[in-house]
Length: 93
Image (tube, rainbow, N blue to C red; front, side):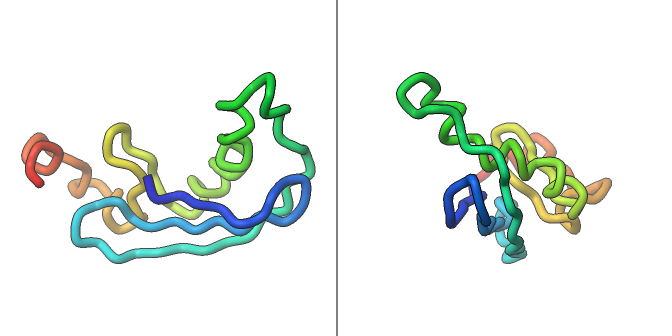
């Protein structure tokens, strides 16, 4: 998956997206201020790790990026109708 972050909430977090579709080089970078701190890592490791991505997901969708299960993030061009994965796209490497 090609969503990475720089910075820790609460505060500004920089997001880096790269399209996971084979041979696509599309990238996006944006900043969000996340006001809420993540859950305590001791009690909710998974929630702690995904906190920033969960908060950013509506904004990522507004930008036209789509998360496709078992594929990752696809840019708006690759996610357009007719470009979604077909069985040969998913199974070939």
